[in-house]
Image (cartoon, rainbow, N blue to C red; front, side):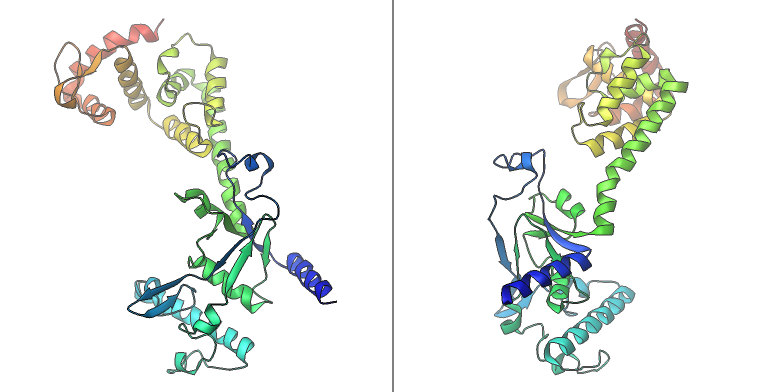
Length: 339
């Protein structure tokens, strides 16, 4: 009967909750073959972790997200700090009443001294707060279960190393976490972020294809690592297909979101900058621009120091006083573009 009650509670929590701890996996990163099946762990494997506890000079501080004396609260601007403290006290007061039947006014000057369970240093309580996660989502219902509310605040404060605060944080982490906190609105926004960028990039690609193929050629040169393959006689459909592949992450930039953003950034440049960027890339390939002693990039026949990086060369060539160098390089490179 007890087991049945546990199952019943889980099903109800799953039905009511829009918050869950889910396994995080990168389909592009090898993980013992599990990535092919959308799994982060082998079946039956669980990760269990207790709430993080930092100790300094014998004093323990639990990373709960419910401690107004925590360093991350202290460094907030005064107005935000005041609101955060009000939020923490309100939540702690509700939890104290629910868990210990101890009603304490959040505005009480002795608020923290009057708590019995939710004190920041109550090791007997905080040592028991833990999470256990596997391939199946762990649903949290903070409006019903006080322990779920505690776990939610702790996760958002970084209290569990194996659970990222969000899908966005999981993707950005240098060391990929095993799990992430999934709130419907935030996770959906993260998941659709690439789709939105890709749709804008495809719309821009179609616009250039329909109305300005010359600019599309220069955009392709700027985006594609093999810039010299594009000339003014390159078929329009080849330009479109190659840039469509690039936007999809099938080109020199494998990250789909970055690729779409880079295409949009290039497509929004003016023709002058696009042409000069293309000139520098192709000039380096054809060795009309070479790197000399000291790392300086120079036209091969003039000895003019343009810069040590392509961006510095761009600024140099955009300057009106260096027009002679610009025209000299164009005279050498443009014949290849006109083939």
